[in-house]
Amino acid sequence: MKKTTGTDRSKTAHWRPATRAVRAGTWRSEHGETSEALFLTSGYTYDDAATVAARFAGEAEGMTYSRLQNPTVAMLEERIAMLEGAQACRAQASGMAAMTTALLCQLETGDHVVAARAAFGSCRWLVDNLLPKWGIQTTVIDGRDNAAWEAAIRKNTKVFFFETPANPTLDIVDLEAVCSLAKAHGITTVVDNAFATASLQRPMEFGADVVAYSATKLMDGQGRVLAGAVCGSDEFINEVLLPFQRNTGPSCAPFNAWVVLKGLETLDLRAHRQSANAMEVGRFVEERVPHILHPGLASHPQHDLAARQMDAFGTIFAFTLDGGREQAYRVLDALELIDLSNNIGDAKSLMCHPASTTHASMSAEARAEMGVHEGLLRINIGLEDPADLIEDLDQAFAKAGL
Image (cartoon, rainbow, N blue to C red; front, top):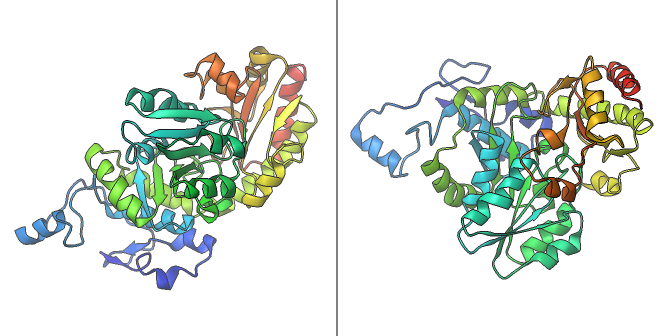
C-alpha cells in the first residue's frame, strides 16, 4: 500500500484546514481508490521471519498487529494531526479512552494534577476518584481564574488538565495564559478540545502540549461510532503515550476510524454552519430564559476571551431555568423536533438535563460547585433550519410556563 500524502510534510504543510480535512493522511493501494480503504484485519502476514523480527524490533516500517497499527487507523491519525498542527496523533477507542490514556501514560504515584472544576462528568471522575486511588494528588480549581492555576502549583505538579469550552457550563479557560504558566514551571498541559475541534479552536497555537478528543462528537458528527484521539509532539506520542497504549489496548477499531475519516471531510462545513445556527437560536433563547451560557453572546462573561481564541463559538450552549429539575423536564418532554439525548456534536439537534445524565455520577455538592444546577439544560444545535428549532423551543417553553 503506497502513501500518497501525509508523510512528506514539505508537500502538504501549505495546505489550508479545509483541504487537510479532506486530503490529509490519504494512502492509496495499487487499486487507486478515491475513498480511503477500510482494512478490517487484526493481523498481517510477512514474506520472511527476518521481516517479522525487524518490524517488532522497530527497525523496519510496516504493520504488526492492529492493536498497534492499522492502515485505516493510521490515515485517521495523520489527518487529525495535520488538522491540529501536531507532530503526531494516536487514535483511541473512545473519548474517555483518550482522556484516560493522555493522563495515565505520564503520571505516577506522588505526582500532582491541577484540573479545572468544570468538565465532563467522567473526566471529573478521573480527577476525583481514579487518580487519587492510585496515589496521584489532585487539586480542582475554577479554570476561569488564571491566578488560581498559579496558586495551585506544587513542587510535584506534573499536569494541568482542562476543557474549553467546558461541558456543560461553557466556561472558557485562557489558553495562552494557562499554557504559558505551565511551560514556565515544566508542567504538561492536557486540553480537551471536543466542544470545538481544530475547525474552531487550535489549543497548540496557544502553547498547549497535548490535545485530546472525543472523536465521537463533532469529528464523526452523525452519532454513529465511538472514537477518540490524542495529539502531541513526536516525543510525547511515541515515547510516552505509545508504550502505555500498546500494553493496555484502548485501540480505535478500523471501521470506527473509517467512519470518522468520512466525518472529517465535512467537519469544517458542519462546525461553522452549526455554530451559526447556534448563534441564531441562542439569541432567541436569551429572550426567554433567566440565564443563558453561550460564549458567542455578549452576555457571557468570557465572550471577549472566547472571541480571541475561537474561530466560531461552537454548536453547544446551556441555559438555566428557575423552576429547577421539574421545569427542565417539562421543557424536555414538550419537545417535538429536538431529540432528548446526551450526545453532542451531532448534525441533529439534541438536548439533555446534565444533572441527571452526563453528570449524574457526581455528588450534588460537586455538581453545585461546577454550576450544574437542577434547572440547567444543555443543547446541541444541529443542521436543521434554525427557524424550525426556534419554533420547537417556543412551544416547549410555553408549555413549561416560560
